[in-house]
Image (cartoon, rainbow, N blue to C red; front, side):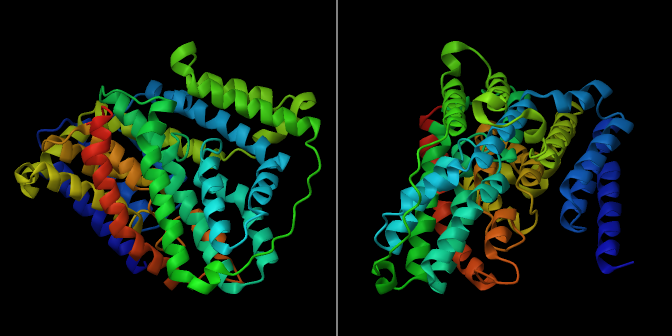
Length: 458
């Protein structure tokens, strides 16, 4: 066996001993849930296995061990967040196939006179895509043609490198502005609901998270301009080709109308009372009416990221089992005493939570998996030490968006870094991440300590 497998086996043996020997007061179902949870973490981190099979195997193991019921297992795929995700994926697939995103992006930046103006405009456009595309990898696939078109047009290696850093950085940091921006957000909302906390709606989430998402994206844009382009390069006149300005087709107007109607339905949910998942499914059905948009449901469903959908369902089952069996409470109590968390001041608890959320991508590469791991192991123990549970969960969900240190840290980073012809080097990613980290930590602390409590969270 390889050293990695030996390490995994040793960690699983240690986890089994700790759970069954160190927590004798817990019910057998709770101890089994903790062991399965530890095994999933080892699979994701040490063995670097694909996150979806690991999560699905963990959900089946929880069912077999009595930590969850068959009803809860099946309910994972029927959860409201799963339907919200599927509807949003269908809508995003129709938008991508229509070519509207690439067209609008190129029209927006065509008149940019300098590289600085180009990157500022791109930052705003990339942020806007978070409201209609439900995953960072989906947004990367949507925007990759825009990057490649610009890379061919500018013919300046240093500017191409800066753009290759800007696209994934803003995609990842701005994902938090929408509850649909990442699967981790839906995991966080599910935990909030199960703990009895108030679950933010579509508009309330924007009000809470948009300041962090927009400010952190702007910070990334400024740092990339300063670190990777000289003053003269930032001001060099830029001549980009004018995109074709043909009128929108009837199908494209249909896509625009359906997308706008769906966003309006999400934004006005508190007024009309229709849940966001129902609005998403309705929008998806309208978007696949061929006479209206040119897309059909059968072909569009093939473009849905079913891997992420199944992964989300399995992680929801894991979260339900950890809470319902009492495993999460037992883990929080077990970590509380030896770490003396209750002796820390509230500001220290918050600072620790922010730092762990921002650095966790170095160990767990999947953003949704990070939320699934960090909420029971970090957020809930800190809540038991005196912090607000909903606030800690929100910090974990928002902070986990910082994940561009390595090309393997997130799929968008790998997509824009390039393959045989690398657009940016590993040292570029590490240098940008190192420059971003202090500012993001301070910004997350400011939001968690001041802004979000003023908005009623925490």
